[in-house]
Length: 442
Image 1 (tube, rainbow, N blue to C red):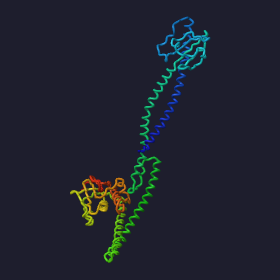
Image 2 (cartoon, one colour):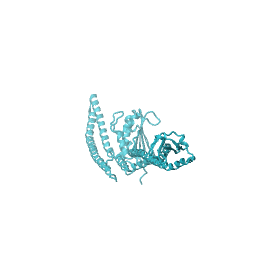
Image 3 (spheres, rainbow, N blue to C red):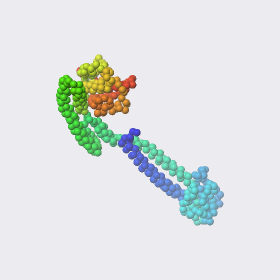
Image 4 (cartoon, helix red, strand yellow):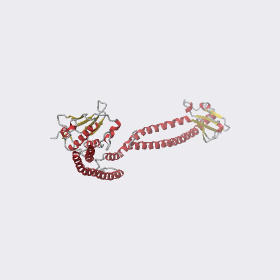
């Protein structure tokens, strides 16, 4: 599963934090709104009762039978009233009050606001005529007002959450851009590029990280340089003794008389030949690790291929099926580096193909080189590891040839592909090198 980026995590957790604060604020606001709304409605209920008492009391004392006019509203929205005497008798009440389930008139204390199922009630103190007005307001009206108020507040706030996510995401991406730049600078460093990271316009924390990484790069470059120097010097020092030992062994082989002596000297010669090839590979490895491959000028790969093939031993050249285009194939790569790549690919194909089978070498326009050989296909799981240092598949190779090719081709800005089985076949092996083509320099 793909891991979330740091900017995405910052945006997510910041938005979640803001959402938690927002939710807490909404709960607090709902509590405050309900309390303040209750206080306001209760105040209106009290004022209405005191304003209505003289009118209803006067109508009762004058024997006026007309009820106080009220608009036609549903039962759960109507304001109810009743005029009561000191002994609890109901003297007059609104039409809907007679149908509502209200507490007994004697149970309500004058001057207090009380609650009943579905209603909020208030009873005025008794006036000089011994009458009090009890008024009841349905709670449904209050709840509806609360819902409408909260809805009007919540809808814009809910719409702000996606906007907050976008804004925080944009801010985090902009803020973390220097971190991505530092990551790209670090990722660009490898064994062939160990230059210091240039300090950009970065925050102090990233500058400290860059300084630590630069110190690590300096120590790594020193260690790699010492390793390459040792390998190069050791290989150079071994070339002469190995050549002398090989020459003496060949001379002793010519003078040997018994089959046992000849067999031992043949084995010794094969071991020295193998050591000579290993020394040559180590020298190539040192050059590949040093970044050989890139060139400021374009060279004709077709001409270089002819030179490399012409230097092969006759027995090896006879197995090569070379296909070159008639026109030059120009690419920016060091000539020696290309020769090393081609020689290693040919050696690898000759070594791992059946004895006597042909090795096909094809160079195409577009700076594409293919070296193909017959033989058993390599498992797909093993292909990716063939370019690792000292990775061996079959045979008595050193596990360096394809790694050296990979290093050189990468330094030249190209790509090495290992394909097995060969296209349109169930077996075989193809090494394809794709370089950056270039027009001929004038």
